[in-house]
Image (tube, rainbow, N blue to C red):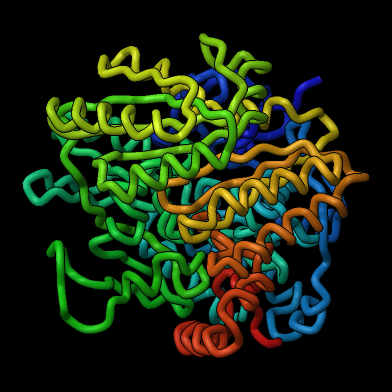
Length: 556
């Protein structure tokens, strides 16, 4: 039996278990749309929670659960952090947390708070995450405005209650885990496009706007937002992790597209980082401080984002190779030659085989290492770029080259890249697990690291695949495994991450640190940068209430 793809699971996390039927769709109650595995839209609603929110405040009986099943998906607890017990006394007691939740309910209304057991589980465990812990938030809040987020923060600050932000809900590295309990702040109701300034090429949005929905709604302006991570990603989480995506070669990362941010600080203070010019030399760059901070310094409630003109013409090319090394070498030469590409992605032979096996696309693919190129610009630029890439590929053992300039046919040619992750997820058995992680290294080392990592997978008898944004040295390793293989998987991933750091790379190119990569961050940066970050955190959040335990600990 195949495991339910997480896109469908994510859409039912806020519904009672009796309604968690994957594949069904619902009409939107508040203009929030998620994309399901069958390509349809699925909306979430909070109306079902009204009755359960009228119950007295209590903590979930499963507060220290070791494993739970939600929507047919096993959510497994990996760790109970040793320092958690030591730090518990720093935060509010259980009774104080209950009082804070009741105070939030009184201030914001019955619909603003949930203590439903399943909702707590879905906001404390993530099937996407490489690490889960044995504790849940005591309540989930659903603010609708910046002012309501501020109210929540003021109450929690007064009672020393931790706050954990929740947006798209993937939490690849345990980003929304609640190691000290506290209150989850779910931004699901803050999903509006507030202002579109097409003449200024920017837009003002709330944190739960999905980037795909944003582009769909502004396409008539002739503009788009070019950062393209996973399809379920939302702006708040994208800012929090400084994400990127396939377009990073041309358009950069999330940090490059933020004009300003509205942020609620730990004591409820509302901060706007700057005004709306496209550039500024006025004071410290608070945007860069907050982008990538994973909710540890403040909660993003609005973001003004730059937009780019929709390209006049586009093109797609798919090039196959006998080895990862040949593919990587060719991709790097394309970058060095300055060929204007929008994206270059690598899928290894394992992933191409999985895509065929799962029937994720309408065609059969050669099961060999494959590069997927995107081109954009004028018609002449696109045609010239494709010709240059084809010429370069001939010098690097390419054994196949296909390209399309017709927009409709491009979708079919890009389809394997689009469905790669979901094909791996669908292959997982019902009682299986998935470990997805990312690293980034200098371009000259990427093929070496991929080759070594793939050999280690084979040597350990593990089934895993490689997908990479090879144009900027960033790639993802996804491993499917049984519980008895967990130690081997941990060792394999840890070796890969440490090796990336040894190669002057980073432990994460776009997933973020969260809980899962704190030790690797220390290995990568050393003690002094961690102490500087800790000083900044303490200055802005002296009680360490905002997403505590993520990136680094309050004390060593």
